[in-house]
Length: 135
Picture 1: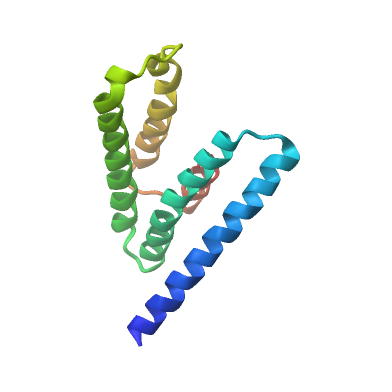
Picture 2: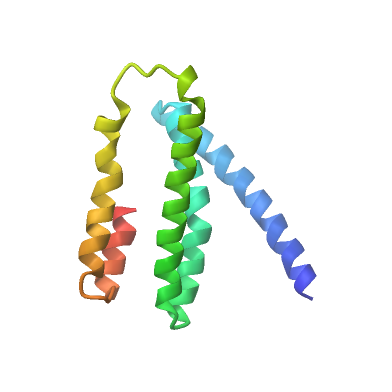
């Protein structure tokens, strides 16, 4: 039975992903949004939604520490993986702007918000909604 549920889930995932990509392309054409922005947004959502679903399930099951660990661990992994890849190919890249000074705030600001939220040791429902809206 588990295998059947897995097959149905994978089929729904594949068809759902195709639908999202096709509709996103229509939105991009309609509003004259670059393909890069739409692609980056889809990748961001595609990598974050499974982690968010797991965190929501863990939170509703009374295991909030798993949700927080999932978020922090995935962010640490994603940042180090991206930075590692950038450093591997950096000898071939020559950006026209100082990427670190322009984009570092977008990595530091969420860390500061997370520190403030975790300062009392509890993430309230309101704080969770605020963090979800920031995402």
